[in-house]
Image (cartoon, rainbow, N blue to C red; front, side, top):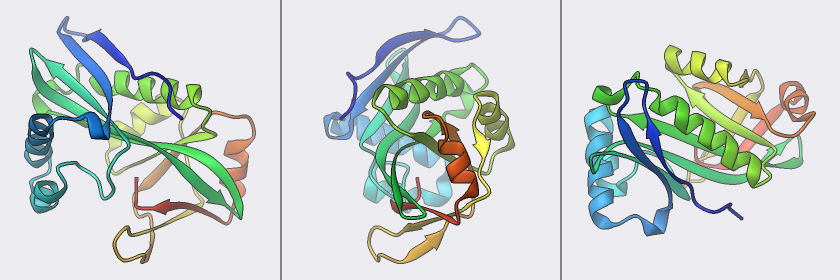
Length: 198
């Protein structure tokens, strides 16, 4: 289902060398999980209990995770997943992602590079569109700069443990990978993204 995993050295705007790797979730070692959990808690301490249980920064376990290291230390991460979404009864393949960059390593181009890699991987595997949510104005600008469109359509998902239906409360952006998909999404009554918010 996925293309070969990505592994590259990225040189930041400041000349810093960072190693970027996309790993299957089950290939992440226990020590990497611990380090990812600590980064998540540092960035979002209000979710510390959730992170300690799950060891990832998401309501659902990612299928793949980006790991970004500087001199061996994990300084950024991100989830990448693909699933079926239903748009007014029609199934589409959706890729979703989330990004988390340590405060000390922000504004170096790391998030932009990960966003570009997410677009590349999603396109290579044949997804119809990429889905992202945010409450951050800096991320809004980054997404718009990569031709993501703000979605006005109501988005629903259900909770993994309770099956309770929820409406997405964050701003939703989509990036069309196949012609005509954005129009279908923008004119739909509802987009159901299945289990869990991305």
